[in-house]
Length: 627
Image (cartoon, rainbow, N blue to C red):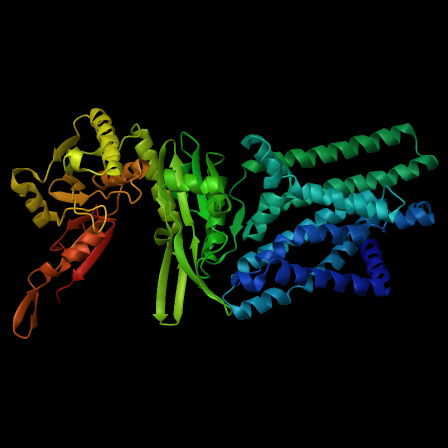
């Protein structure tokens, strides 16, 4: 049997290459592939050393390639009247089908092999991760096998090559588009997930990004099995008119139906097998830890992770956005439906950008981009928002990337530890939500909120309106804080400006003016204080009340354990530098550094006398070591 299959395959391949059209066909396929990669996908404009665009278009190109290969294999036999003669030969129908199938796989493999110089060339231009490339070729070959099986089944049912080409192409494209975002957007999340399991597109994307999953491989094998079975059944029907009875016909129908149903049901059953997968990428960037998996599978409510990535990014950041997207998809897979992942380009939709600005406080960051024609500043988004209920956490590019500079012109920008940051944000928002959505639930010592404001008659109208909204908001929060929020308001200008002088000396607060030439001055400052630690709550530039609420929440979290990273600050106070005979003690020189660090960290002084970093510290800052 194996000999017959190989002989049939060899014969089909030799027939294919006996005609000049074979070389024209392969040349056309290669030319179209290169055109799509370098021109349509604008490889050089992307400034990213990867071959993702090559495989993003491959499923569409394969639909035409496979259909063109299979359109005449059975249709030509029917048209020439040789099919009945072929079926009377001692060679079985199964051997005929497998022989033609293997021949098509060989021809497809040759076509794919012609593209191998593309990733080789790209690897010469930059560092390339060969894991996803290897996975992409596996995915392409598996998808090609499925398309070929479909094409053979269609060809065996028609004696017209053009009809076979059209029907096969449409069937392959429909299978690919079935689970695409354009289709699933019209249905609920449950129906969308089912369509993704049925369509070949999601499976192809999963393997091509570097994750080899047994369920995806079996999916393609089952498609091959289903349509090869139908191919055999259609050919057997041709023989029925010769000498077969009804009993044999019914048996063939039953066996084919049972085989198809078994392949479909086994696909559904295998969805619970999640451990049979291999991460082919360098550093296994698409494999989240078991601790993260265990945590996210116990979520009580659906959690939303939304990535805000602009299409135009700095060349150093552009390659990192696809990696983050793939990692977030892993969260969705590991959470078993409890995490929803979305990707948005706010610059493409004013409404989404307005929501990002007002709800999450996201602002585009200006990046300098340049090519050989021009240099410009581009405002772009590179953020991740983790939302659970009404609680959310925002991660910016400073939280997600790490910059290493070996030399002035040798800068390496990589992802810092995105899984840690994302999982930490998930824990933070779930903890807040489970605490009733109130950050005051974890605060032990009350927080004092102080407003230093001039009399309302002296405040400009926009500032007065903001202050009135703030006063109302603070009263509501005070009532719900169970005594953990203390409110105080002072007029710095009373009693001969006594309080004004005090806050000027203590915090540097000076009278404000609406304009440089405006003679009228006023005070409007806000602070939070707990246990001797004081932070200033900034006034929103646009005097937006929503922006103030965001600043207020950030400020409260500064005093809530577990919400902000704790930075242990060490400096050798006893060590002194001798500058021209004058002793300059280090402790006095780090106030500015502490003030800047305090904007993002909870600062705790440590002397390290025990030789151990404090257990509650996330970061150790050694300002001046001794010995």
